[in-house]
Amino acid sequence: MRLLWIGLVSISTLFAASITVPENFQAAFTQKITNTKKKSIVYSGKVRFSDKNRLKWEYLEPTKKEVCTDGSELLVVDHDLEQVSSYLIGRSFNLPAVLRTAKPFKDKKTVFIAKYEGKDYTLQIDAKGRLSRVAYYDDLENTVLIIFDHMKYGKGKLKPESMRCDYPKKYDFIRG
Image (cartoon, rainbow, N blue to C red; front, side, top):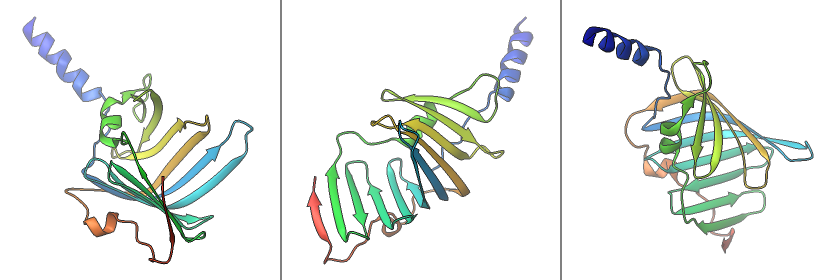
């Protein structure tokens, strides 16, 4: 009986899919935001993640913008407007926590559902277990779909300078 139990646990462990939680990653992305009236806008650029809650989004199309967070401050640099906005955030988006709460969707091995701080996320992974898509509703009821391309997982923290939003001193600075 004990051997049967060990065998069942081993088999269930083999077939349970999971999402690899990276120490860092870098990728190209496409982000499609669709409002409740079915109007969409598509952004593209590069993203970096490091050190549990450091994210840097470099939007290249249709506008040039950078969004950086260290978990306590969110900095938005709009290069077209030559403006920087800084916001203190009460709670940060914790990507590893979202990935750890992800459960397989039905019998699919590459689709997961995660619940984090009252939001539902649909996540998809590639054949190597790396994050490839994220879908959710934002606070304005917009549908957000982010598709990652050329995903590279890494070990350790990325260099701090690669995670900063840089901007000329002449830009207007707004504290939110």
